[in-house]
Every structure is written in C-alpha cells, then in structure tokens.
Length: 115
Image (cartoon, rainbow, N blue to C red; front, side, top):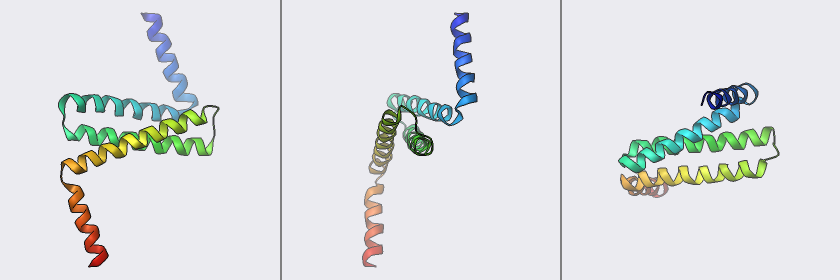
C-alpha cells in the first residue's frame, strides 16, 4: 500500500512539474466527472452548472494546448475536447430548458430583431 501511495505521489509531482497545463486539465476533468456524479445522485442543478463549466474550460484548454504544442496524442486530445464541449453545452442547455430560460432567450432575440 505504501509503495502504491509513493508511486502515485511521485507521478503527481512529475506531472505537475513537467506539464502543468495538462495537470490542470486533468484536475478540471476529474472535478467535472465528480460533480456530474453528485448531480446524478442529488439532481441539484448547481452541480450540473459547475460540472458543465469545468468541462467547457477543460475542453478549451486542451484545444489551446494542442494548437500551441502538438503532442503524439493530438487526435485523442481533440476528440476528448469535443466530447467535453458537447457534454458542457448539453448540460447548460438542459438547465436553460429546465428553468424556462429558452423561451426568455427567444423573446429577447426576437425583440432585438424586430424591435
């Protein structure tokens, strides 16, 4: 058990020292997953908003990192970024529909267009 903890700690320190953006992306993805699980259990919309925000932030960070310094796993990272963005936008749209904000947004945009 101690060896496992030491290995885990050294891996964490290594990732943090040599690739900080990827470390932050991993933390954001883990938080998004944890908050999505909590939302599934409690069905409280605050957790879904936080989870979606983390997913969108991690997706944009992945795309920017891959655009600046491509890695051998570029396709996998881009695919993960797309999946996270779809999840994040879907979560925010789900909240918007549940709170009745879609009809409010439609009325707002129609008032801008014809007003």
